[in-house]
Length: 114
Image (cartoon, rainbow, N blue to C red; front, side, top):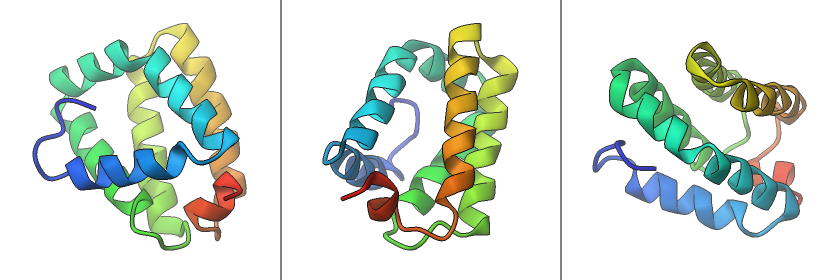
């Protein structure tokens, strides 16, 4: 994702590498690509959204179980996006929330089934 500055390239690359290894991750990446222009616009216009995305990316890419701090970070991003999103993106955000609830206590690899 563009607009995240130089802090997150490693986290973004690491997360991308993990996502591409499973069907779940590939589905998430398709969703991200489908809404990329809309999300990138939000990142450019809303600095708070950009900061929340940086935090969530960093937490998700650290190879530790998804804990309450990580869950809250991702929920902040989903809340930010939901507030500014089109209807199609809002539907995908709702699906992501459901998966996030089920993810607590697992590593990203376990969630992705890798």
